[in-house]
Image 1: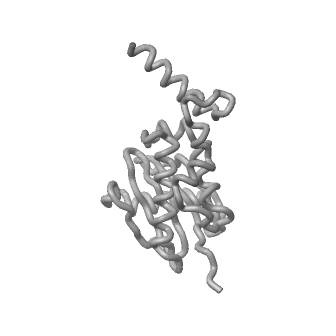
Image 2: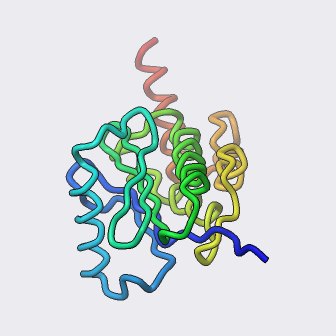
Length: 177
């Protein structure tokens, strides 16, 4: 019997290697300082690569790391060296596409910080206890709240960040008239 694919962590770092959103599913890094050291080593190893258009793969400390950059955000998914890179790539693409849907195509650090709740919901919809549950961006975004991201939805059905974004859009439209 084949075991389901497992992920050790999901990292979302800014263009300086600082945390935006991270979630660890493995005890390979038991302390916060070890986690930060791992994040720094991942960032340092990947910062000079060209992962702006496609997902890239690298090996680091007996782990496979798949990653992709967009604007000032760096997305990483890490697993053990025995895992399949194609599955990890589909996890990363699912995360990236779901975040893009939830942030309405405006994927940058500021927007990510404003919608951190949705990003962590994406993490939770994709991975549960290190096991990959979902990789389809539409399903992930739907479960994480894309249905309430409709600007015409009642405010009571929107998250706080979505309600603020809707209010900002309405204000911008009214000022442009």
